[in-house]
Image (cartoon, rainbow, N blue to C red; front, side):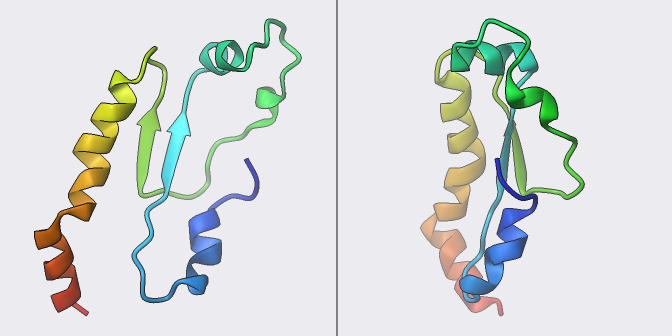
Length: 92
């Protein structure tokens, strides 16, 4: 999905903001099923290992939306908590 380390590459555009990068990964069979591909000629074989560290990584191999909802609730929503935002504003 485009160039690597996008958040790091474009973070200068929002200098007073904290950015999180979530890398979503799934096994080849899961990606193929979700895209409706039933052969081995999909373009996912061209993906390579990440040579940078995103803020968070989500393993998206479960069916349904429970895993995604749990990930958001446990890992992303705490960054939006008002007390945490207030503390973040106090620290330079």
